[in-house]
Image (tube, rainbow, N blue to C red; front, side, top):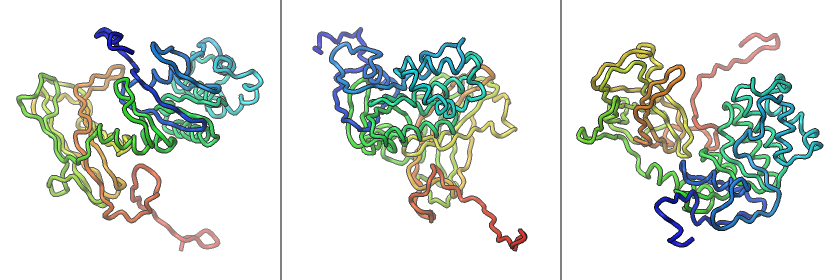
Length: 385
């Protein structure tokens, strides 16, 4: 494009993007919201045409973009499976051969002959993903499939993606789950505001992206000057990480506890206010969420105007060694409504050291809790000794 093509009134969802994906390569696409990731896959899948330039694709393309496209609410799950399969390029004989596998994977066997208008959103998405996932294209374009369903089904989705990758098919995979990107992909592409930021080994691109997002330094405290506070019903004023004896702490041993403290101002009476911490690991996976209204004495109460300070403790022997980030959210959640007052992303950062961590480095899981086990030996007649 020339500079004359770019007026102030034109928004370029993608601008000057150029890269090559080799046959059999699994490549991740990362970037913040609005970076152009989904637009890129829509162009590659021929859903959208580029304003300028072209995308050259060699091979049959299957897309898992807007899961459920082609489902008709009045048709049953069985009928929609055949209809959606046809839209996605499958022959009827292919669907016949894979039908039982598709239904078993979706876990909606009991409702396969029920019109999908009676499905829950989770059931609808499970079946739609299952139909799309059992295609056998040479090139597979995948956009945030791990956001489908509950945690158990997300794990199944990831397993299916791994099997597709191992079969030697070319895969472009968009996800905010950076751990999945590094697990599945050899290379990654980072987009930023519609432009190509970097291309390289997945681990390197992800780490560089996270450093830019969160910074490289640990941060045991955060605060804002009173003169900078904006008029708001709720406003965070400070946050700290402390040792059990109240000292500032940005590095904790595996067998240490860590106190998280946050202060905030409430300017009008608010019923049902919740203040939440989100703990993220270095791959931007959310490790856990904790909410102050888990405490019955604060559940549903009216918080009168004033200054508040809240603390909670991350117990020892829980977090595996690595970098962690703490975010804060203040909101009111109603039966059918949600009001967000403030969201403070990555306000604090700390490291968990190897000290006290006696487990193998390859131990599975985001956390490594030391649970209380009771082991006994049984005699031949089943009695404990």
